[in-house]
Length: 477
Image 1 (cartoon, one colour):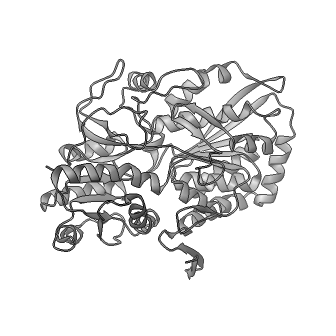
Image 2: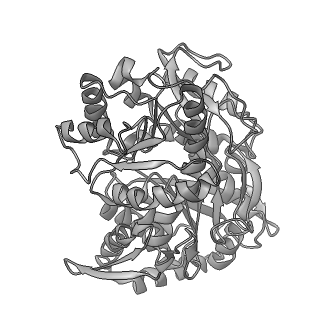
């Protein structure tokens, strides 16, 4: 089976059977390039980049594009704290010697406003007006794809995180093969680290199996996937990936709740479908990837209408305390993935600070509960420093981009190897997530503050280095 192409409203949509549309990434890429066209096109931007690369400046400039405001702002909540720690580290505070020359390092932060077009605009500004040597970016395809595309066209090294690698790869012109592999040319200047659909499945499936054996629940699962890019991709990718990972275990049956519109207000029909289930058996397990307010509405209605799955494993929501407190008691034992936690055994490659101390200091300084995006943001700058250690000139764009694709180190997010044989493609580092459940009370941190709800690591099948903190329990007994 090959790639299927259709034309929809003037856009060519490329669909890989079993994986869904990758046009979402293309559209985000076009928005980023649209911003570049406003300042004279990609050619002019590339010339500006080359001129900056030829400089003999003793200052390295790192641009950071992040959604400080807008609907993705929760991801950027820890930014000011994290950047303050990065700037205080030795390499940034005292400078770094590269090729026999001592360089100062400057970080320039730009807000994408959670808008793909603005993400492209501020990236263009960083390249053209500031002459940055490298751009780092985080938090969802809406930010990372347009930033990466502008940098790729301008010939500026770029490092992204917190975006499924499949979406990022598609946005940069690649496709996803029938077996979930990366197909296409490797981007010359862009690299990224995070994980993809297989890791989601490998994180959630072990929890399903354990709860199923414990409760003798039906092996029927409900999918709440909206009619948007993320929802359609999950709908297409989840069943075949689950089947491949499940191996010789008894099969799971998928019940699709329907491609509903974002920000719907009534989920009665979907809930009825899940209660009916398949083969005379109701859905006892739940997977989703909705907008946070949609899950809030749905989950409250599900409780009111007495649909209570044995285990809820959710994606895209329940990553932040704000989601949890908005649901109150209905958050109890809802499970999700975690790509960084303070109880991991990892430490900063810049200062040696432990993950536990990192999380505790954040809570002490900000009076807010730790969030997992702080770990990945920190690692963006660790990876860049690792790359600079392997070049003779930090203004050499090609050399820095090449070095980024060969980074292999252990830092705040654990081991990252951008050139691993098991990676989807060179320049993609894979984090192994763990399964967490939200439960009442506080996890223990050095100097921690008490919080009403906390995420506890309950399954470490994918990453045995991170210890368990609590017992996996059914969401609804």
